[in-house]
Length: 132
Image (cartoon, rainbow, N blue to C red):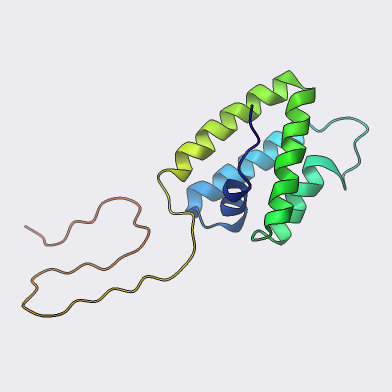
């Protein structure tokens, strides 16, 4: 299994993937807590890396450290690897349906007559203008 992309971890930790992303982040925290290795201090490995990324979700170095820690654990524990692979499949599917980048939207409408103009960013669900 390849390492999880640090960019995905950053998007989930930072909340830029919306409510569903927040749920995926919490489910990763729960997964790590269930499979905490005996003898591994809290400050190192996945729990510490998760906390570090929570504190600075835009820190690519912290995200890479978490990706490495998760990969290391998966290589040591086949059951964790299977659970992490399922989590990753769901997280990557979510990433494909949500905007995980940051930035502003700049829209411009000019000339002519417009009947219906909708300006939006990161819409979840449908937009149904008009009533009839």
